Length: 163
Image 1 (cartoon, rainbow, N blue to C red):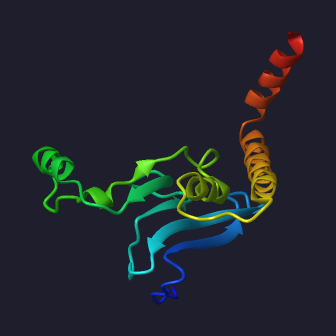
Image 2: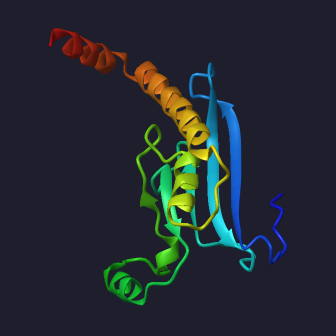
């Protein structure tokens, strides 16, 4: 069940984070099955501004994607002319690919965005902790990529040590 925030004038922006964990395809490592990072204002009841989603083994659109929940009249008019579907998509229904299973944005990347765009005020020392956590996420992804394709990893190491 999703708990929706109530409008609070002291909290103008929300970052909703949802993870569903399970075992990987081999049943040996803990893996993210789905994740959603949603940014919304206090007045947004359901949709928010945008969200990053990851849905393992998703068919029909990219596993890792961004949806910008906005209207874009020119884009929607162009899409109406191009689409062969009965139900025409709105701009906010587009799933923009963002790096795939292994190279998708981390929660830390979204937090960095919110700070850089001055949408939140960070606490002292935030950068060090954020970078530590981002490095840990990327290491986990690298280890998983190596497990999935050890021949490429071996070749990369051989190339590195041949220099």
